[in-house]
Amino acid sequence: MSESPTPQPAGTATVPQEQVREIEKHMKGYFKIFLVQIVFAVAMVAVSFWNFGSAAMQVFATLLVAAFNGILVAGILMHLKEEKKMVWKVLIFTGIFFFVLFFLTYLARIDPIMQTLHNHH
Image 1: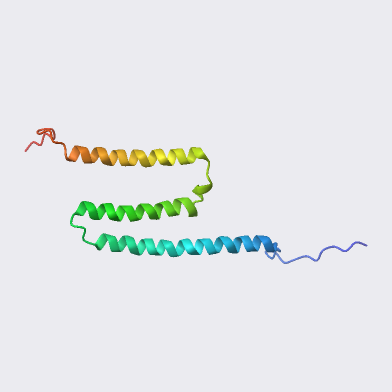
Image 2 (image 1 turned 90 degrees about the horizontal axis):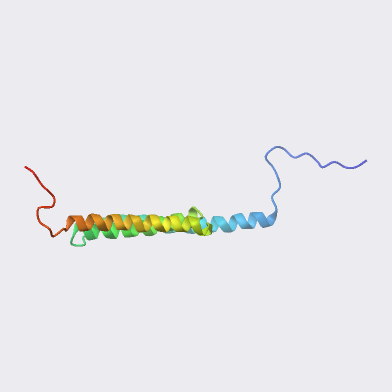
């Protein structure tokens, strides 16, 4: 008679050692990202309280730290670093469009042409 494998209780599957090592490697990377995220969070709060002389510079500095934090999350935690070129093209276009809209808003705010806002009282 052939020996049948002994049945294992449900939920106790054996996992190959190389898969365990790969998971441990990923977990170490995620822990490092967690620590960097904490540093970015503290830096963002610290920058928001720091006096840069103008509110615009303070907002810019805070958004800069937040942008680096977002790039870290998107690139590593969301695994975008391994995506296809089309996904990157869409993301880059979105970023460019975002900054163009901010620049247009800035230009409208400092418009040197008088009487263009039509403020009626």
